[in-house]
Amino acid sequence: MTSDYKFMIQLYPEMILVSKKPVTWKGFLEIPCNSGRSMRIRLKLIVYNYPSLSGAEIYFGKEIAFIRRKEFSDKVKDLMCSVTKVSTFLKQLQLLISNFINSSHIENYEYDVIADQAMETLKELKNVLKIPSGIKISSDSSLNTIELSLNDVTVRLQRTSHRTCPWTVVYSDLPEISTLGPFEKNILTLDIARNKLKLQVEMLKKAWSNLKQIDKNCWVIDPLQPKPCHLYRRIYLTSSLSMFIKIDPLNHMDLPEIKFMGSDTEVESKTDLVSRNLHKWDPSCDIINNLITLLNIDAFPKKEIKKEAIDYNVIVTDEECCICFSLKLDNETLPDKICNNEKCRRHFHTSCLLQWLQAIAGNHVIFHQIHGSCPNCKESISCRID
Image (cartoon, rainbow, N blue to C red; front, side, top):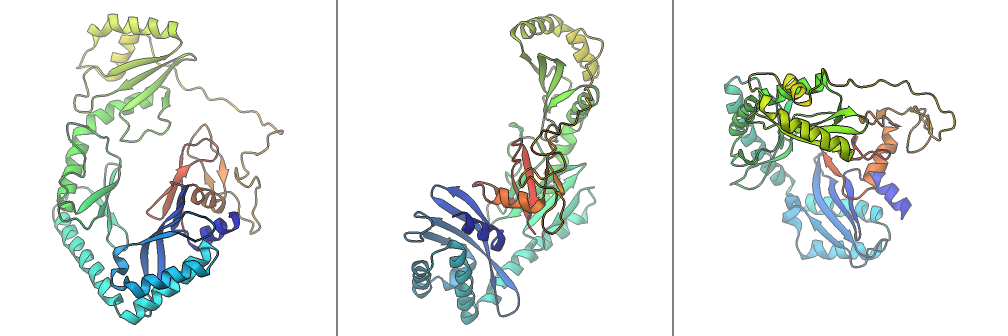
């Protein structure tokens, strides 16, 4: 089982293990064509009796709709009965699909459909670029995914086949605000997406300014790496007390949501103090001075910088890969990926991390990046699929 997983990761990096019960792979399979180009076929394979392919189910994307007739289905079933490994099955499936595509002469038709979609996107992009907006626009090579960025805030859109909802959001730095509704609602064109992004960034500008003041003047313990979508901060006060603050994005100078976390005694004391000082909140004053007034302190504690002593008894040193426990691979490659979590900062060889992430069910591939959890601290981490 382990060896077949290993071959799958090496030969089919875009086929991701999404479940172990039943064993299920989902992703894309590259099919070589006579023209020299390759077609990416969406595929889902469910192997109920792994490693045996007996009783397995396979689902194809619409890319090969023109060859999915009885003859093709029978060939696929025969293939499942004749091989013993999933990796071998996929290799022979590539050849089978390639033969059917080339003999059916449908490759050009499929690419015409893709070209029509690309032309439609190009028209939309032309309309977007007519009016200067300060928004940076980028896309993948197929023009299927478009990225809009403004003031370090990014929204990534992907074209769909639905006429009523032609664009869906696959990534966004914008926070969810119930009164505004989901960003992707009524995104009929990229022009509308651009206008919504610009409007929401403008609306949230002052709220983000308040959060940056907190980041600059306080010891923020959560989130460790604040993003525009994070409208909250958890601030260190003492070793046994922290304060959670959540800002109203549309009323940034109003009193924020405040909650204390820590020992019962300190939580009760601080909650009582803030309750007595609520009347002192001044909407015309900056947020830091308002918070200092509420807490009756002179300043917020600053983050402590500790010098860590080297422990020569640890299993893995800071420089070694946290997965294979070595510094250099056989090809002399050094660990070149580091966890972003400041409390972790473990090193990984890219190849080790890629294999780790691909072997875990549920991890997703977006923009040639596979996303999952750090093997050490479980915080989010990603790795490029070459």
